[in-house]
Image (cartoon, rainbow, N blue to C red; front, side):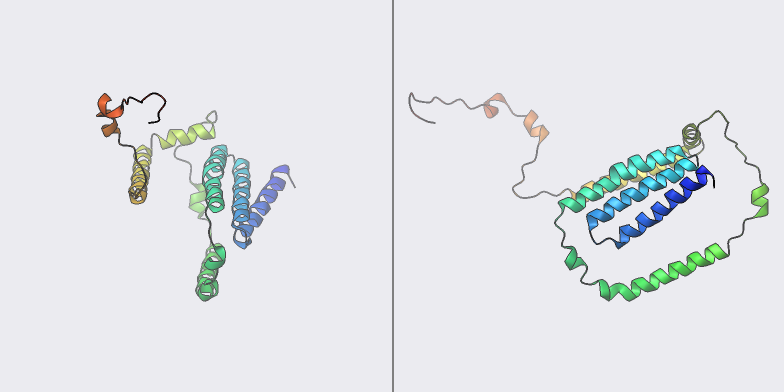
Length: 203
């Protein structure tokens, strides 16, 4: 067994085990920690495949932002998980049926998979130069051939972000908000009040 094969089996085993612990752990904080561990091992698999850019994106974006955000949300919110699990047995038959259907679909896909010989013999239309790194190749393809799709995806994410902000931004009673136009229009007479305090007396 080569070193690459040994690391592949190591990362793959840890990824599957940590993914199973994400759904099997009773503590939500431990589930998020196992999720971070699964992301790190998946990044190791990407490194073995030569996709170092995807590995770094997986670590920086998912581990550094998404998983840590989940962890802080779970730790900060006072969620009664016992109340959430009360209706678990009620939906267990439906969930088990959906899981069995997905499992059968996966078995059918794996058993019926046959590689097309013409696809294996086909040549790559746009080969990547040998001196170009993986990150440079992804950037070259992303900003030339798929530039408009990339901009459309960014626009869709921007619209989703604005929609989420609009839906969650509500005026609450008793909460003081900053009004920049009102602050800029304020004069010195409105901002400063001069009082003459008598000697040895309070305001």
